[in-house]
Image 1 (cartoon, helix red, strand yellow):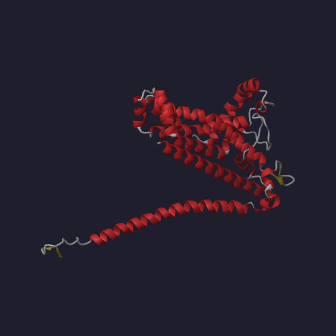
Image 2: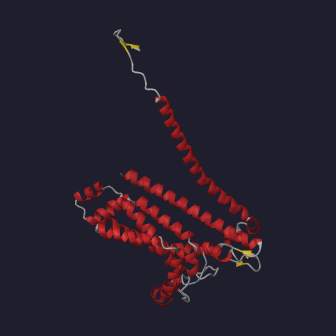
Image 3: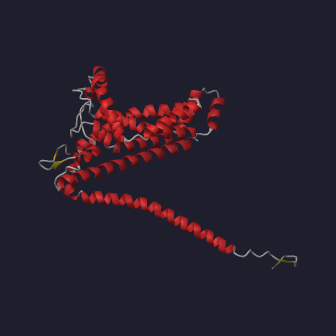
Amino acid sequence: MATSNTGVEVRLPSAPRGRGLRLGGTRGVDLIAKMLTLVAAVSVLLVTVWLVIELWEQSELSRHAFGFRFLLDRAWDPVFGHFGAMPFVYGTLVTSAVAMLIAIPLGVGAAIFLAELAPRGLSDTLTFLIELLAAVPSVVLGLVGIFVVVPWVRTSFGPFLKDIFGFLPLFQGPIYGVGFLTAGLVLAIMVLPFIVSISREVLLSVPNDLREGALALGSTHWESTWKVVVPTAGTGILGSIFLGLARALGETMAVSMVIGGTPQIAASLFAPGYSIASVIADQFAEATGDLFRQSLVELGLVLFGITVLLHAVARLLVNTTARKAKGAA
């Protein structure tokens, strides 16, 4: 009961029984949900830290034997116990670069067509087929690389590039079919579906008001797409590119089947080589001796470091692009 300024008593309704209990129960459920999701988030971080610790501990002998020189040494000689990571770092970066140079223009161009220019029925059908390509196991794509890409590079594509660009060191030397170029082509096939599907979804998420505004100001359909829609979706497209790059860096089986398996640094893309993931898969089972095995583990640590570094750069680029887009808006 309360008394107003006029002296009239006003009886306030009492709260229903159990209301405090229900509110307390709701807060309890919220707290439980918060704790469960917190545990899930922390567990991901703990798994990552545990992975780094295991790689660090299991490569102790190699780190003490070679130190920082392990990253710069070109020799990989299990017989004499001399190991260096440079040929494999080089092979990983070269094959990934070739893959991205092919996949980025094709993937972004296909995404623009599917999202903005193609009829909806055709767009949905082609997108479904492209997403099926992402589900193909890497070993199957490796077989396609062996029986299709390798002969094509050896007999047609390689000689064609050599005839036109043979004055460049990148396209000189004998053409074996297997090598950096073939591995890059297979990787491009593998990362293309990720770039296309994610970029298409990002483009479709751009508000129609922007398209209609550009058309109302006199832009053509292509001008509104290229000058308004694509810049607006630039952050998401950049994210899809780096997701494809992460797939290319860590791919193992398909690359192992077509790269040639030679630990060397060669200027020519026709030359055989090795990537970090492929050499670990090829030689870990036959590694004799602790130093050999721990050198392979240290290669895994190096690959993890390269991946973290590239993801950090990607995050900086995405954040910078997002801030610029927000400022322009």
